[in-house]
Image (cartoon, rainbow, N blue to C red; front, side, top):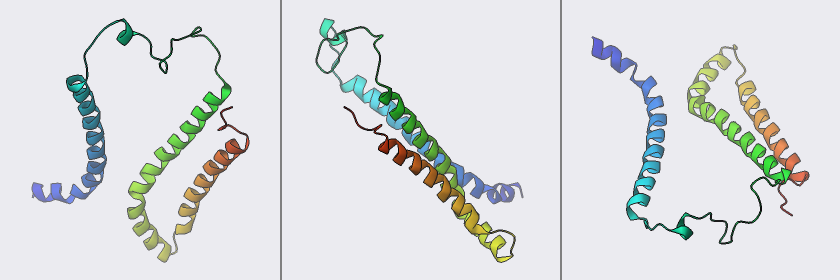
Length: 143
């Protein structure tokens, strides 16, 4: 009887298993690259190897010099799109189940399924509008 209860809850764990496998593959990829680099890479030490590398040139100036504000603007735009992806991941993972639930509720007249879809479209449109605004302001031009 207990085995039957465990198997009844299995589909809920199957959805999380995909995310767990994704994180496991990402972790193993990172660790594998570090191990391969340590094993296969050259291990020479010296003044030149331990020195600061800056495009093959000797570093000039202090570390306290000012950067152009465009660097920060591009970083902020990157964060906006990163957060957008973080909002899309749960949406995409639960959308097939919600679609079935919405259809049942839509048929019974309890929910308008298009409202939920339009909310995601509006969210995406606002993010894209911010991208177009930044583009028009010249944030991506590196003079």
